[in-house]
Length: 422
Image (cartoon, rainbow, N blue to C red):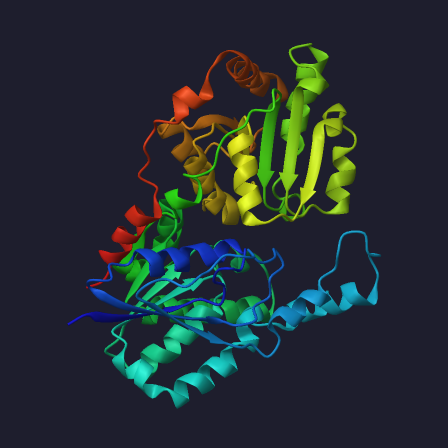
């Protein structure tokens, strides 16, 4: 008899949110000869990064249940767009809403989920394993509700980002206290906990030593299907491609611009030999800082573009540009885009603290070039950057990288998830 698995995730494809990828990979690669898989997701989620239009999230052997949120996608209209006046009513309302929301925007989804589960008690009764992956932490609240209603269920609480530990614990007030109480409840009541990096797991084991033995780490991954049919076209220029947000400067693009300006100054490169392509959101203050560099003229701001176009730009680039913030909540996790970068088999140019797990992965697997941002010093960093320039001009990166195999496929990572089921 097959085991019944229920996956809880507010975000799910075709939502372009990074958090939609892991639950989808679980649903796709869990062994269907062993498991009946059901996914409970939001029908009208907030989608600040847009929708991957044309993508069909249905999977053979997976039942997809969509429940509406009271607010959902209508909240996207409250977001403050780049260029709007700083003191606008819209900005004030958005800031106020952020402070009132607990634990996250999926709180408006939670009541409808509870109502659905009360009307469909057989779903909880027949579930053997419930998997919740966060953020959003509301996913864990839903799984906890199900676990409390049916104690025989095994609950795997999956953390993709820090929650209270190394994040909210650094803040004061009532709201951090509420997050602390909720996190402790999740850690205590979950049967098993998984984290997306070893460093993150270690931090939680230190915070909750009593529960350390039920904590494990499983990396994110990539799906070979998404890039295997993409062709690579060279532009003739050295192209750096970046996908994602800069988190209001926490991920700083400035070190790369500094290095390029130094290369122009020393005549190791000319501006017309370089292209920097940025896909995603960037705030006006950060863009204003970037205008101070000569290399700003090399930048193409692509805006929000469909996922298939992002992958196409990746394949056509010389280097894939990765930035990891200099705060624990960032450098003790690994951006999911690192694994997408690995999938395209292009050299990665990584700006991150040397102690970050991203740096360790890139270094140990010879995936590209690392620049330490925790103590960034232009002169010493330029020695490595000059090597990068020479390699770009003289080496055939396709020949070097295309035949490399990687353990970081989603299929491999989900097999590790399966090992956590007792």
